[in-house]
Image (cartoon, rainbow, N blue to C red):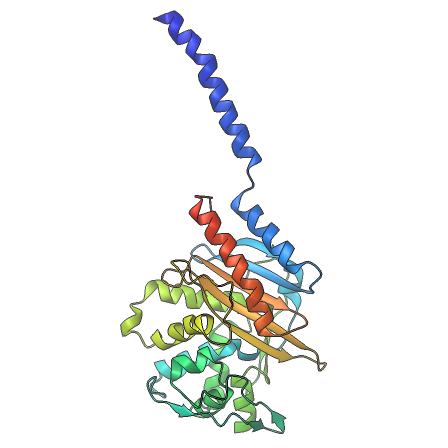
Length: 311
């Protein structure tokens, strides 16, 4: 009996060593995600950062310094926070359909809607999905300038994220008149953020979804809008997964000091129980371009998850 046990020990040791070496050669989930992001962002100025929703830890990134230090207009990525405040304050009926005039000029700036002309009336969720400027310009007038500024500050859009040691801090102003208040609700005036601040704000949205009974929650239309945005709205991507790991999110396009536009996508996945939250920031381009990059990143995460890779 003793001799048989002695013969088995080297075999078991060899098998264990082989397993350890094989595991060491396999790329980690984080390395795989970083590689996917690096490939997608090759030659593109901007940044990508992904967080674990529950822990708040960075799990993948590209150009973290840019994400932490670039302060710029967030565009339509603010609309979910504006709608959430309106819903929680009882200042908008989520089922009420507001008319979209499509052509829109505010304080001398052309802010025409870019969704399909066939979309003429929208409820709250579809207003997020189609990023309707007309809807949000009307709805935002139901808040006071102070209420709107406080809403954006509570969302964390002018505070440290503590995700990195050194980071810039955005700013939120208080509008002096209704037109500038409307522009602020659209993310074009009186508010500047870093990509990390947007990411942290959307992580809080994802945590809110995890902790609340959304069908009966005032926030329900906000999350429905973020899901619809990817399904058929302004963040729609042919690469998006319609299955169990579908993602939700919002695009934003704005211009900084120059006329050159930059684009954001911020969102989370899976839609039912968020695990990962992601920001894609492109220094040149539009929100739709950022959404196109986000889709394969979520797909890579889903593949790692299906293969049992550690998060």
